[in-house]
Length: 196
Image (cartoon, rainbow, N blue to C red; front, side, top):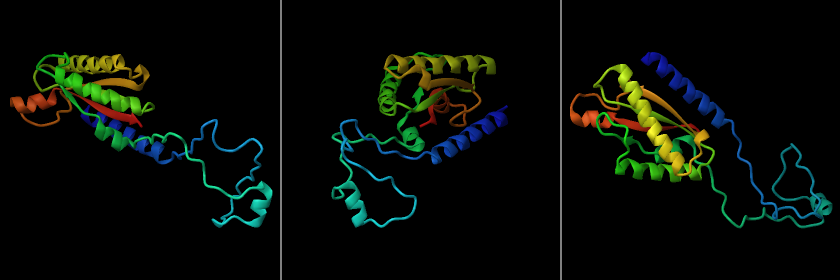
């Protein structure tokens, strides 16, 4: 089962990389800015042109070339998936609990601020547990943990359709070991960027 889950995670990663690599950035103009209604523009030819305008270009437009208008407010650049991923922090839980601690709520508040700035990003919340208990019990507990974080983010204004959940139970430990320090690091929710 772990091999199958690993395969799906790797496959999703490659699909996400493929989709993001093909996206082209487009320049955004505000409605009131840009081309004046009386200004005539010539379509860009697909051939390579020099940076200096020709006399023909100036004659056709009736104006001297100018640089692109500068928007009054800076355009927010979308973060790449890896940049966004690095800004989302894990939260941790007490033993046998899906309740959010004050620390977890603070982390979720910061994560919500990041997600609101990147309003197109979709995130998967992964619930995890330590090794104690049965596999079935830990899958259910991991799901409750992921749902707790999901609901808190929704209450903070992140749209529900941007958040999905999954439980790995005790199948994906962050660290190996059976001491309390290792167990505490394994009782967590992780926030994985599905689409930036």
